[in-house]
Amino acid sequence: MYVRSMSGNGLQAAIAELSAAYEKVTACELELLTRPDLLAALDEVETLSCQLPTMRQRLLSRLQCETTPGELGACSWKEVLRVRYRISTKEAHRRVTETELLAPRQAMTGQPLAPALPATAAAQAHGLINAEHLEVIRKSIAKLPGWVDAVTRDQFEVDLVRTAVKVGPKELTDTADLRLFLLDQDGPEPTDTERARKRGVTKSPQGADGMVELRATLTPEAWAVWEAIFAKYAAPGMCNPDDPQPCTSGTPTQAQIDNDLRSLAQRQHDALIAVGRIALMSGQLGQLNGLPVSVIIRTTLQDLESRAGIGTTGGGTVIPIADVIRMGGHANHYLAIFDKATGSALNLFRARRTASPAQRIMLIARDGGCTKPCCTVGAYGCQAHHANADFAHGGNTNVDDLALACGPDNRSVNDDNGWSTRINERGEVEWIPPPGLDTGQARINYYHRPERLLRPDDPEDQPTSEDQPTDSNRVTGDEPDAAQTDPGPDEPGGPAPPGHQAA
Image (cartoon, rainbow, N blue to C red; front, side):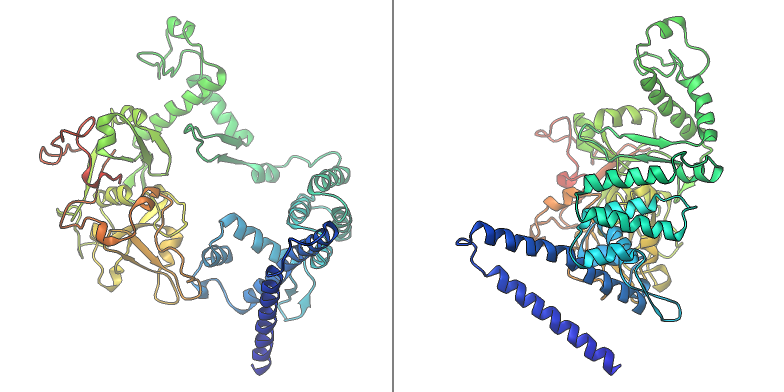
């Protein structure tokens, strides 16, 4: 223990010297330096920037030997890095992956082992390759066929490193692709395992125009299913939104067929909508986190009556208000008023542990998704979490005491070095990190409700619950009573919701 303490003190002292040296460098005057001096200094700084990640990898590798993410209050090392250093999940994943490949390892018996990519680690330690080179080498080695032996794999890495010290990432990528082709010129033999590994459907982030791009790699079985569905519902004249009465069953008329000017891609898109609606209306999809599987959209009463604005689904998709109104024409509607919740349907107190469907609708309207900071899971993937006090500790199943949380984050709240939650005076859910992850970061998740960032920070400027309700929302049946919807003379298209804020 004494040796470990001395080593820790030595490291801290060395880091302090490094920090002091950096401050000394930044204090240097650059205006009088000549071109050769500037280039030489820039070269040294670039080399150091390539070398510094090696120390971070060694520290993270050693930390992984000393503790676990659970002891720090996280479910993975990616979460530890993301929360503590406020970086993206993608960047945290990159750092953890590079640590696994480039940092010194330790055997189960305690014996030190070389890094998984020793040549790459050595080149990085000498500042000869940068982060872009590392990414190309890592991804290229991951593409090696499974039948490649260890000697060939090691030689493949060495050859890539030798190339990386001389060229840029583009040339390195071209060289790696050529070497991979020469190793397996006939390509992999198609197998069920390989096909299953490649299957998937991914979507792009929603664009400025609201459109979402899908990319799919389907197994033969999956395409055989959709091939038959498209043959029916994507045929000319079927499911045409331009028709006054679109044909969604039976056979379209000749006039519908002749007037169908859509492309095949557009017909298949419309077929997806029709098949999805049929599935949702069938009632055979069961329940999702306590509610029937359905499209849930939250918007403001003002936007609905003025026919302007947007709605947001339980999954976070933004929908123009015209589409919301059209979809709501054959849906059940609910008005969610955010004040002091009243009625036995919402205030269950100690009657039961799980939230009622009415409470879940209120939570979806208020939170929009998981309330833990930086979590992007939408309301469809969330559970009702006792935010003020756990049910086992006397907490009430009251909508004012509940919050949305995805499964992993919900389970991360515990008494043993875990997260804790509370609801502040403004009705916002705050997540307090465990000591190992607390660096003073934000306690509130603004991902699903970015409009909250526009609110003043001073709570004295905010209306209290005794003054007026803070929020209102109509979600996809009961009409509000007249006292709640009396139009104001200065409001376009009808009354505004209390507080003029979306739920």
